[in-house]
Length: 200
Ligand code: GAR
Image (cartoon, rainbow, N blue to C red; front, side, top):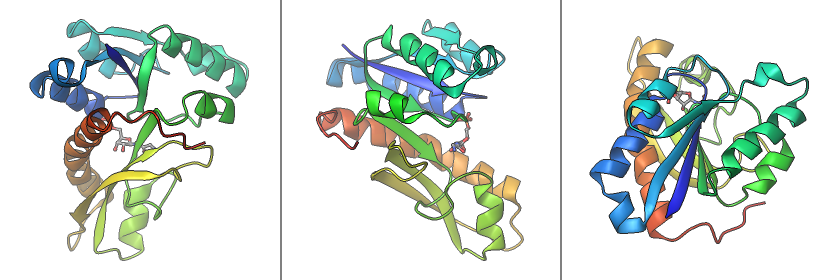
């Protein structure tokens, strides 16, 4: 079985959408793949309960327990490796990862970012898109490389910016599309037998 490990920081709505897609699209039968674990860097992350309720291993590795980014990433990698992952999925994981962590999972580490990369890497993407006068916004699934929000793009979803849009309103509409986009991108990754590509 190809194990998918999902890393979250908060609500985990993308994670939940991926778990549901895995069930509904029968990833176990079609690709021999399953969501093996959900790991959060915050013990209070809402998504942990959703995972536990579904019988998925769920745990927190609190970044606050570690003095350095390197020490946290080493503990996180140990928690991830305990599930022998074929694919590691960042789904609203709001910590910058060290190059050592990123290289460890090169070619099998995906992220979703709430903008049409390469536009608006970093935080506060929706406000910045509105202030820049963009007519379209969206989300991007990409491979994670050492440079933040810059890895090879797997897929994107486009969402119109409406007159009078607020960052919150736009974010909500983009998030709905993220749920479809991420599941679709992972399914394609599994279908194409990816993991052989090394993006480091
Ligand atoms: C999503 O919009 C995701 O794209 C974004 O955080 C949200 C998490 O929502 N990620 C980033 O900004 C990463 N830089 P979720 O916890 O409900 O999936």
